[in-house]
Length: 299
Image (cartoon, rainbow, N blue to C red; front, side, top):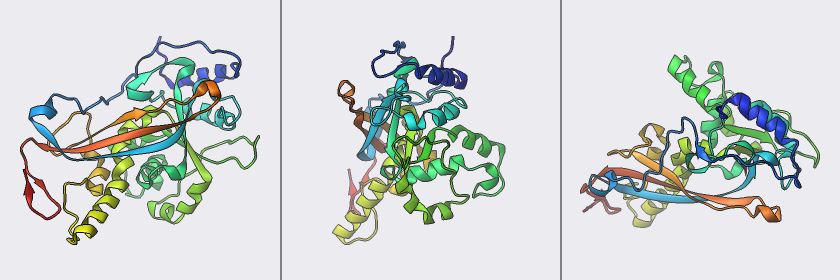
């Protein structure tokens, strides 16, 4: 019997209410997530003789990791305030997966909780664009492919207003502004918001998590060497924002990424804080010259 359907997720959420802090929920069997496209790329044999990194960048993020049976526990050990709303959201799509494309199934499925402002703006923009209806989209007429792409993004990341009172329930997610321009003007409101998602939702967006850091590093590099050119062996933030270059399999001119490390929260102590590290590389044919910060070829 498959357990990855939206209906199964909703059923699990309903039953999760029966398990409290003193009741040990049943464990599921860990297995691969159905339809998970990604795999750890940095040890692919093609990188040894055919490809080499043109640039590499890592960034670590702070989050809180909960499990499915924590949804009906009060904060800080659980996500009680969001439980009912998440039940509605999860019923609309399969569980995206846990870490490394694995799914613990049942009540140990992980969920991440972050302050929305701790998520890079590039990721926030991607989420909001996916949540807009086709009629609200910035690019006018929507092809069937565009509609399918947007539908695949929906409900991957649930953005909520932070509860204003300790026992307040959050009934629904935040509706994104109708245009990216308006969203940019309203960014100060992000400080009042949080986002909840499964670890598996990360993998389709990983280059976006480091794109801003890459752009900042490149600007500093250009300023330091006085060139102002932005050329160098660093990662180009604009390239990393182009998810069309990002693929599960390494290729010349492509972008690869993975969550290389994630810490475990001290659950036995009631703690949920953790970190995860995103590593991203752009690739080029082995033996190709890199362009140094002074504009010279580096072999």
